[in-house]
Length: 153
Image (cartoon, rainbow, N blue to C red; front, top):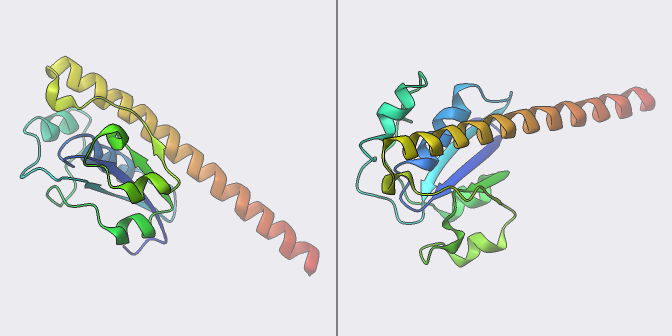
């Protein structure tokens, strides 16, 4: 990744929730941020409803298939967001020792189209909130650094 600040979206299959979150975040990321996604047990392919549900919002799938969560991804990320895999047996124990957020979203693959959209829309609101939080946090840090620099000049 070329951006210095990474958000990592994690779910079990990396075929629905985490891919949607990655696409949503990267559609309008705060300056210097990017998102990646991965699964603890990646599916063989993207859920057939994920791309159409993203297209309803004017978004495309990320350019990668479902991919395995690696230790490097976990270490590289400044923010880690799970979609509810902490209760799943496939969740690696190390993940539970890192600072992360869990959005506890149901697996949309198990839901009808309306349920899938509800999960997608909850995800969109959560991603928007995260982007705003990160942008505001960066502005505060920049303001503090500028204030310190001005005082020492």
